Image (cartoon, rainbow, N blue to C red; front, side, top):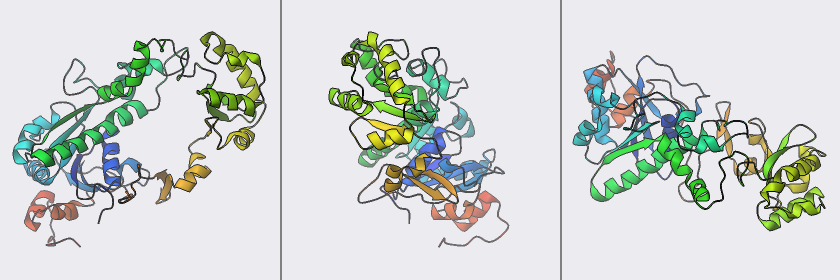
Length: 381
């Protein structure tokens, strides 16, 4: 029995990379039954493949008419699908939304791409950095000298996977109310643009300048930045509000009248140098002893080894270990129907029989699909 608020939701995921698997992981962590269609002969199942956790894998050769029919039969029984091919690929396979929605009018057909299903860039290759570049997000992030990609958090996972999960669930709610399925065109460039809503508002109000590190939230302000300690490690300071800023000056022992010019942009470079000098006088551990748990708006900057061991993260069990691999626990948290990691990353084809039988295929249909040479059980325990 799968655990979580999405228990009972049935999702078909066509294997891909990046945001598609991450979306599948999010849905699975909250209890959805996600069956992943993998390429026959492929590999998988490494414990380190975290975003593949919690699925069941069925390996199919999508050049085979029998495999295409099996996919359509799975779609008939699904609430939603996830596919991340370039525009037109699913149609050429015979698995496009027109065909699928005829077989299952309530299906929510989730399409994940970088550029979207239409537009001048729609058929071009790209990666996260490219998708956020045309939204203004990449230009706003980095040093004064150059934009710097913020990992692939803004495009792939923030603008892509999270928006697809949100869109799929909204579509499922609509389908259950009306009986009407639909296509979700989820472009990472659209999602990244949506994430920039507040900053476009800042620009419209005159609060945002185009130069990087000249604004309130991009490292331009001395009270919203990272600082290196005497040990070489870093801390983060976010003392925006006046009362938090006053506490920052108290905790750092700064008694300099120049710091009264908190919101004077022209003073920020000089004040940053002074604050940096003060923070450089102590180690990260010493600053943690002084500022942890206070209203300074402070946290140490931790690496991937340190983060899972931080007391706050251990208290909340933010990270868990599965098969020797430390990884983020399911999020968010539910009081009545908590999510869970439903299983390890599956080997390709590990659930050919089990998943197909569980989704209503007969033993003979399963044998035809997977080319089984041995009898298939009538039920799955």
